[in-house]
Amino acid sequence: MSERPMLNQREAARACGVSRTTIRRRREDGALPGAVLDEARGWLIPVEDLLAAGFRLNAPAPAPGRGESTAGAGAGEGPGQDKAGVAEELRAELAEARQQAAEAEAGRRVAEAEAQAAREVAEARAEHIADLQQALAALMPGPERAAIPAPARAGEHPPAAGPEEAAAAPAPATPAGRRRWFRRR
Image 1 (cartoon, rainbow, N blue to C red):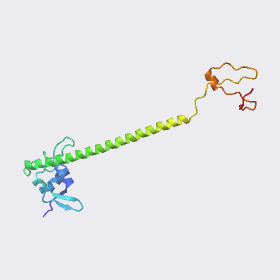
Image 2 (image 1 turned 90 degrees about the horizontal axis):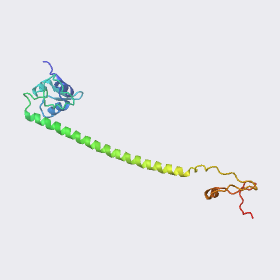
Image 3 (image 1 turned 90 degrees about the vertical axis):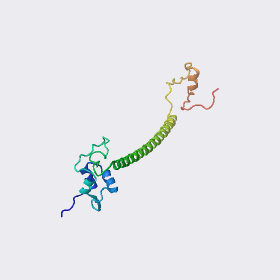
Image 4 (image 1 turned 180 degrees about the vertical axis):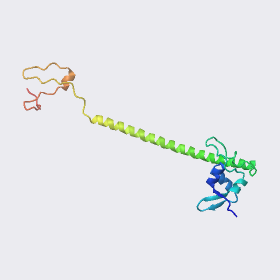
């Protein structure tokens, strides 16, 4: 007596041209009664159970991303599966897709909140940098003044200066290079 060939869920899905989720659902629904749990390989499914459930072996796999449902060719719309089973399988896939969409939406909201927080931090840092630049500018020396005329020598009169230049002109220096602190009479 020969041993029945057994496939794990991944091998069964590849051989039947369906997803592993479809095989798992059919196993959980009881359509694959001979499936046994092996510690090393996981769930093992007899080939006879796959054929009895309406799967075709060596069926072409559905093209990814084309929106084909597993209820089409190769998924068991054969003698072992009625329309109610197909409808239930489609409902389960729809529920899974809705769950994935809800998770994606939650992820999008988290990403938007993180981006907003990052923008606020960047704005606060930009304001802080502007304040620091303003403080640094206040600490820097002013621009050099225009050329200051040389002091007049004894007996010479300095050129006439306007009110702005007169206020900016330094007091005459003493012979020691210091300004006098008293008025000369």
